[in-house]
Image (tube, rainbow over all chains, first blue to last red; front, side):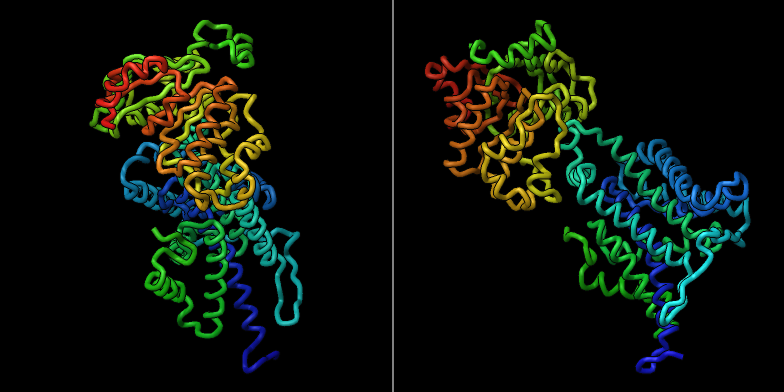
Amino acid sequence: MATFLGINLFGLFGQLLVGLINGSFYALLSLGLAIIFGLLKIINFAQGAMYMLGAFGAWLALNHLGINYWAALVLVPLAVGAIGILLERVLVRPIAHEDHLYSLLLTFGIALMLQGLFTHLFGSSGMPYAIPDELKGGTRLPFMYLPDYRAWIIVASAVVCGGTWWMIEKTRLGAYLRAGTENPQLMQAFGINVPLMVTLTFGFGVALAGFAGVMAAPVYSVSPEMGSNLLIVVFAIVVIGGMGSIGGAILTGLGMGIVEGLTKYFYPEASTTVIFLVMVIVLLLKPAGLFGKEA
Amino acid sequence: MTSLKPHFDQQGVATGGRKSHREKIRISDLHAFYGESHILHGIDLRVQQGELVTLLGRNGSGRSTTLRAIMNMVGRRSGSIVVNGTETIGLPPHRIAHLGLGYCPEERGIFSSLNVEENLLLPPQVRSDGMSVEELYEMFPNLHERRYSQGTRLSGGEQQMLALARILRTGANILLLDEITEGLAPVIVQKLGEVLVRLKQRGLTILLVEQNFRFAAPIADRHYVMEHGHIVEEVAANELEAKTELLNTYLGV
């Protein structure tokens, strides 16, 4: 067994990989939350339910419509995004001018209802979703065995997160989004349809969660609780990163996945609490979060 | 006097041919509210093509609110606001700029998450014949030098120039400018005055909210004086001398 200074390298790299995988999902979800929060100033508690919808969407598409993984990877986020657009227009928009506590409660309620609905329809035990044939193999690296699908998760999530970051920080469309986040009223005066932008942004943020859900279906079991379990951790991550920054949301998501993975190796007992511990420390030292702007 | 601006006159005739086209803004019985407070009490004003008209008055007299009401940025408004021949009282805010309006808010509204060039390129074009980025950089060389700086890192004067430049790029031919000289050094105020004269020569129509009467007097065609949400006096440029005393009472200078 390969060891270095008494460290089992196979175990360490294995946990690092798990951390990177989890971090990829954290990054996708917290990125969606950050985008929605930036423009709408609401915390979308239904983000976890949208992730769950993405996984179920992939499962339903495969088992009832014969739509394979690759098509689902494109179609399901679009469908989840469309559901998000409907939610924003019908439910979130009418209370947008109220205190943000209302929209928080609203999205929390939506999450509970969706979770309840899917538990009623499919039970809570979870359903398997096979890894697509193209990604069934793996690669033997010096200190670990890297399954293709796990590598694919890391790459695909990095591409989507990086692409989203680039779109927001470097393009004209992104400039609209950044400016709309800062001063929506002036953007309207410049002739930009801000309400439409808000709807599309909400749809996009939610679609990111749907995408994460499809990606997750083959690695975690498809179950109604998968979203709420993940979301608590993602909220802690969002607090750690701070709500101000797109890049911050991505980096914190990945980083916390790795921290969690390392903790699993060095001190497994703390692995489920380490992120919350980091959150407490960050809140004490830098209340606005690592990348957040001080108010 | 309109014969000085053949370029835009031709445009107006070519695109619309309507009689109302000479009249760029016509406001009748405009009331505006923020929540429960009634700010404007029945404003009537008009601005002709190529004119530079100022709104004078003390702080809180309703001058900025008049501009914001034109852009539909107030809580509620009633009455009539016709821009370039189109009634806008029922239009959503994002449709109004596309009638050819460019709005420069009092607080300048430079975006801190955008660099100078991004700020400049941000507002969408509302007409086809806006100034090019090169032309604007030539007019405001400081902006070119600092084009990759964060927008809000600029000095107050540079931010003001950026706020002005970005609406000139959109092709807006009616400019609503709110207190553009406020808090700026005399040399920059002078530069802004020169810019306004150049814009007027290009045939742009300008409605200017201004505290600095000495800045506005030599370049404006007409002045409206506001008090408590009413227009209390209209003064043409050639009546200024005769009405100086009256203006002093209203403006408290």
